[in-house]
Length: 252
Image 1 (cartoon, rainbow, N blue to C red):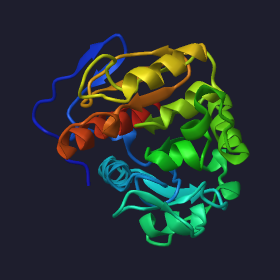
Image 2 (cartoon, one colour):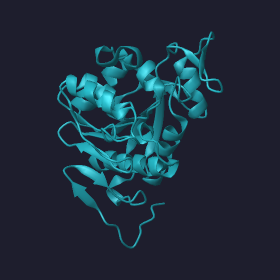
Image 3 (cartoon, rainbow, N blue to C red):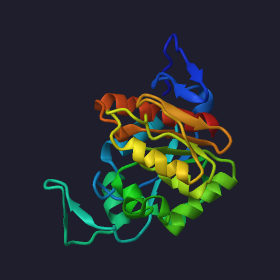
Image 4 (cartoon, one colour):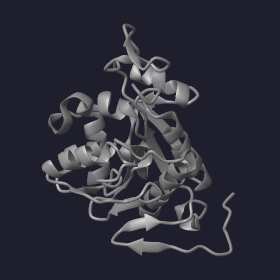
């Protein structure tokens, strides 16, 4: 059921979205959205809070969600208590199933024709398992299945949502696109400046936006937000992801 506040103020400035995370218009409902995961856990997979925020906002927006992940070994496995790599091996799809409560499919089964949009949460898994940005930066390679999926949605004119570090996937696959990773030269965004510089070197444009905002690249139908690129309270990250989800549903 959709809930509408009596009043919603929307401020749009140069394609930057800053809207109430509780406002969803009737036209956004009934969209079919694919969510691509990269494992389970911030240091070697999908960031759990980001995935949860994406799913909650999609649910609030009345979307039907299907989850996917590549069936491949993780780059490595991290002991999240110690913050150190371990010797074990784990499969990205199997680990992602933890977040999906078991309801997930191999990325090879993702059909663009059956979906109106795709969203990829962040976490180091996006930079380790979906591409190799974590070790190669702008010279990274993107998983072939992930690249094919992004290109297919792009070619079909269907929106792509990305948060935290995952916008680097768009920067690598779509030269000339616009993304946000937060605010450069701001201590609250300790990793943004270097990553934004690499994105710029790829021929893309980095747009400074706060954690509570998202940026819409209208030409490429990309919607990005900083999320945990910012050292912010979790509710602000949650709300920022909400603006990203809203932007995706509006474009779908």
